[in-house]
Amino acid sequence: MAVDFQRDLERDGLPPEKIRAQLERSKSRIISAPAAILLCLDMRDMDSYPDEKRQYAERMMAVQSAAAAGMQLLLAAHAEGLGGVWACWPLFAQETIRKTLNLDESWEPQGMFFLGYTEESPVARERKSLEEITQFNRSDKFA
Image (tube, rainbow, N blue to C red; front, top):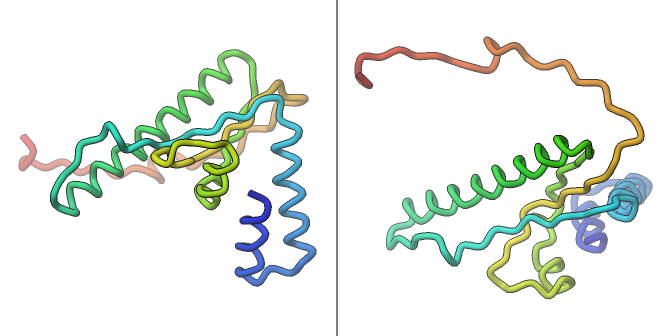
């Protein structure tokens, strides 16, 4: 993945020192994590439709399902006293990961989770209020 990541960062025009720093940070996460779990999507058991619109919706449902499974994994880890980080790098290096791990061609890497016991608990970030992130519309049309 580092080779793919470096290539992409070079294409983005980042200076060499920033590229090195990002690569080292990524490598450190992978190497230092006691456990790494790769989340993959497999469309083989999903429905197939003749039209592009419904096929796209079916794929989106599968992506959403994989993301929901990933969130459940993090919640379960937290319940067991573990810390976890979700990284989406696998989306940018799917072929490399498939080849390296000898995965079936139908498995599409989506995310990687790094789990372990934390040395310290991070301070919770300030969150937006519910009013800032929601919109409620009332309509008789849906009654």
